[in-house]
Image 1 (cartoon, rainbow over the protein chains, first blue to last red):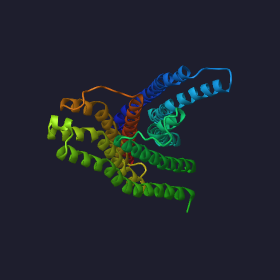
Image 2 (image 1 turned 90 degrees about the vertical axis):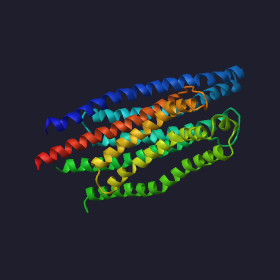
Image 3 (image 1 turned 120 degrees about the horizontal axis):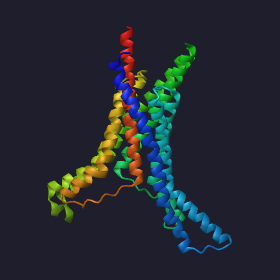
Image 4 (image 1 turned 180 degrees about the horizontal axis):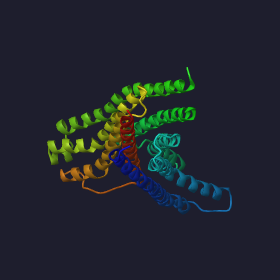
Length: 177
Length: 172
């Protein structure tokens, strides 16, 4: 392979390796940001309810923990998706492009993003309103932009599945050779 | 038929199913974004709210277009992924067209985020709409990193396919 053909690939590999680190840092930051966001509403529960050593006190603690997890869940799911993407970029940085590991993590990352969007748009707002007794029905916080994102993540998830199948085929072929 | 051929057919069938689903979903997505936009443009043109009357019809229409621009860019990203499904359905899993389309889809998704977080709010403020206040949620930043990573994946696959082709051409 000539150097001219190799140079763009090497540059892309280096970028991918760097991007893998950025994805991990972003995942950690989003987790920390989510924890910071979720702590205050959870602590508010103790401001409104007395912490007594009986069932009511236990219920208050469970309530606070529940509220915390409902608020942070979309961000944690997205953090997981970013960690999956970092693994894909890591594989590419090592020059392993059409591997089962890379393809599987593309699929998992997109599916994680879909779950995160699902909780952000309907899951978390609805559960929060039920837990805080603000309402009973389903609550949607969806903008047209979110619709486009959901479609994008869904397509990437399917492409990940097809890439996974193709990577399995390649592995079998390599074994035969 | 060997195991490998069966797997290839299954993978191609999966891509084909998604291709058909995409052909149905993309018009629906366009309608879900486009119809409310058309309705809002009609309202600011013929039954303007006080804010629209204040800034003028043209500015009000531009403000509405800018507020929907991120959603349109996100929909464009979805449309950009269709060629990838076409290539996979044809059995071309390692393909120049597919990796380029992946890259372009990532670029469109990234552009959608820049429009949403920065460009649209600033332009709307300049046109006399809502004043610019930079509200960034961690989730938006993380989704932006997600879109950038998809773009990177497309870019790396593109370079890998080009290198493979160059290697094969040398052998031939």
